[in-house]
Length: 407
Ligand code: ADP
Image 1 (spheres, rainbow, N blue to C red):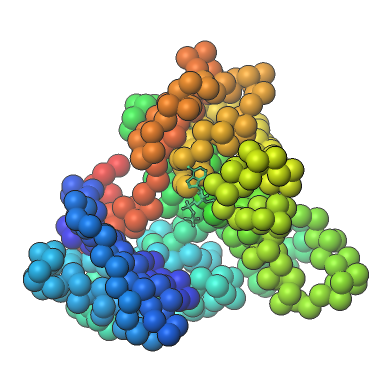
Image 2: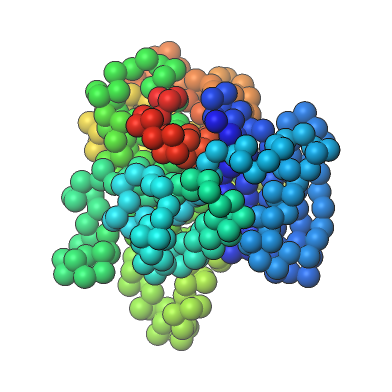
C-alpha cells in the first residue's frame, strides 16, 4: 500500500512516500523555512540525483501542495493521481494519556491533540497544522495519527509517577510519558525477528541517540521505563537539551541571574546539553573533531554524554533483572563506534562486553552485532526507521486489517 508519511515542525514539513508491502521508500523530502523570504524544497528519489529548489511558501498547506505537485509531476513518474496514496500517516509527538495506539483522525482526535498543546507546545501545534493542511489537500483519504508517546503507555505507575503531590497528576496529568516510541518499538521488533528470541521472556534496552536522545527498558515487548519524561527535555544530556537536573537549580538561577521563565525554558531547551557543556557545538561530529584537537570542554561534553548512557543502561539492567540485548540507534548510536564503546566500557562485571573490532567494523545503515561472543548481553547497532512504523500503522488502520503485517 502506498502511504504518505508527514512530519510537521513549526517551519518545516518532512515527507516520505512509502510502499509498505515492500517496506520501500518511493520518495522522500522536506520543505524547510516555511514563512521565510524563500523556502527550500528537497526531494530524494532512490537512484536519482537529489532535487533542490527555492520557492516562496508561506503556510504548511502550501508546503503540502508543493510536495503533491512534485509527486504528481508526470516527469517524475511517482504517482498519477492523489488517490494512488491510500493513507496518510502523521507523526504526532504527544498523545497525552488518551492515545495508547495510533488512530484514524476525526474531529474528536484533533480536539484531543489540541488539548495536549500545553504538554508539547513546540510540537503538537505544528503537528495539528500539518494534519489540517494534509486533510485539505488530500480529502477522502484516511489520515492516521501515530504518537511518539504511545509505545510507552505500558509504563507502570511506579515508573511514571513523580514524587510530587498526587493531586497534580490527577489535575494536570503531570507524569512521565516518554518519547521516540516509534523508534524504540522499531528497533526492538527488528531484534526479536533477527534473534528469534521468545518475545514474552525478552529483556531489551534500546538507546536512541540522536540530537534528541532517550533510552528505554523493554520487557516482554512492552516499554516499562524510559529516560524522557513529562516532556522530551528530561533524561539524558542531548544536543541542546539539558536532560535531568536538580530542580532547585532553577530557583537558584531565578534568584542569582534574575532569569524569567521564558529565558529558563530557552536555556534548558536550546543552549544546554552538549552545546552548553562544550560551549562549541551541539553536533557530536564537531565535538569529536575538536576533542581530537585537544579541546577539553568538548571532551568533557562527550564524557558526560557517554556516562549518561552508561547510567541509564545500568539502571535498566537492574530494572529488567538482566538484559538480553542492548540496541543502539539514531544518528550517534548508528554512526559513532567511539561513543558506543565509551558508553559501555567497563561493564563486563555485569555481563556487557563490546567487541572493539566488530564495533569499529559496523557499517552505516546495516544491522551489526558488536558484542563479544562471551558477552551475556548481546549488543547490536540497528538503524531505526520511524517513518516505516508510521506508514505501516497508517496502512493497518486504513485497511482495518487489525494487525501490523510486518511483525
Ligand atoms: P535527530 O533526528 O534527533 O535530529 P539524528 O538521529 O539525525 O538526530 O542524529 C543527529 C546526531 O547524530 C548529531 O549529533 C550528529 O553529529 C550525529 N552523528 C551523525 N553521524 C555521526 C558520526 N559519523 N559520528 C558521530 N556522530 C554522528
